[in-house]
Image (cartoon, rainbow, N blue to C red):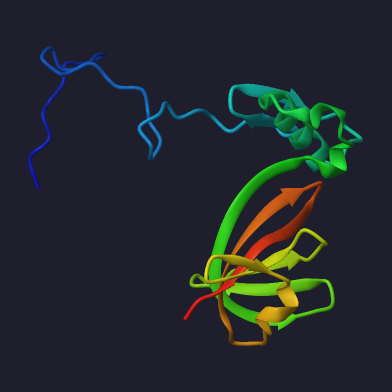
Length: 157
């Protein structure tokens, strides 16, 4: 371990480089966590009302951040975020699919009419995948109105 340098009392060492602002993993300036109820998406910040569900504030921010036609959709139908999970099916229900990732987190993905299976790059009805407990999958999903909804589910081999 290198010995610590003695800095003059009350200040930085005279030849020390200027301190850099903290950055995140992408090299972008890190920011403090927003106040509770405040949601940041892109450059937009929207404050949720006290009596508002958390996703409503996030949906407002998502609407403000995009230029498509989401402004006329009810907040319960606005896509707040999209992501992907790879893991193993732990449960298949009538309207849901549970996937455990490599870290042990379980994702409950709801199925709706837009949920599709993918086989060799082609979209197929999700029932054709014959998913069961233990099946390795990769699933793209959207966070919509407080619900996590599967979009594309693909069996991994």
